[in-house]
Length: 212
Image 1 (cartoon, helix red, strand yellow):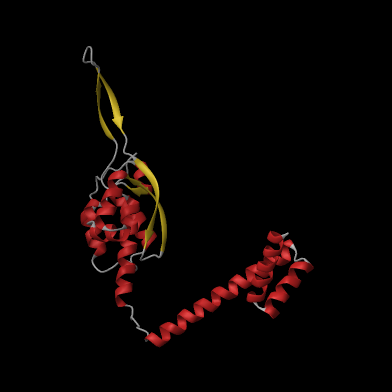
Image 2: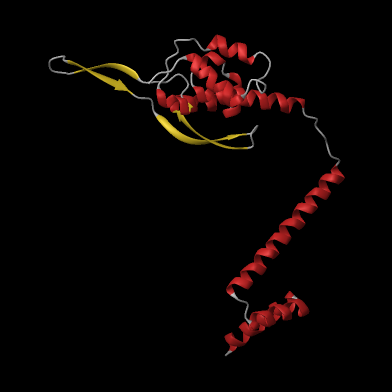
């Protein structure tokens, strides 16, 4: 059920890599993980925020008899969006960890703000080291701003791309379900005459039906 901090440190360095760690992170990890660290086994695969199995006694109402019992944390499986990774992360979290994440403002902020000595699970330490490394790389990236004309061109290009995709889907549906000759004639007539004439014909037809 338990594992020591040295084994956790070895697994973490193997997953992340010593070269990928930010400056000074390895020393902080070694200070934060004592050798006698005891963590429940399934906490390796989630963010528990210090919530683990608690042990105690169940006391009967009549005679006050005591019997041993345990309290397990309330664990939920959630999909949390990471802006740094630009994707959803499926992770098992406790309800206390969810409240901490909401208070911090997201999974990225929670991992960046929480100190290493409070990240008592292997998965939490792994994601924290990974997010810190990516955050440092994002800080070194160069930001480019576009002029309003270029932004307008980009928007026009996106609109044309959407229209092309819609036309391609429509053609694919026609080929899949078939396109009768009568419907094709109606489409050609509308394209040649215009929508206005088609509306006038339909309105005249409605009037004739009403008169009859």
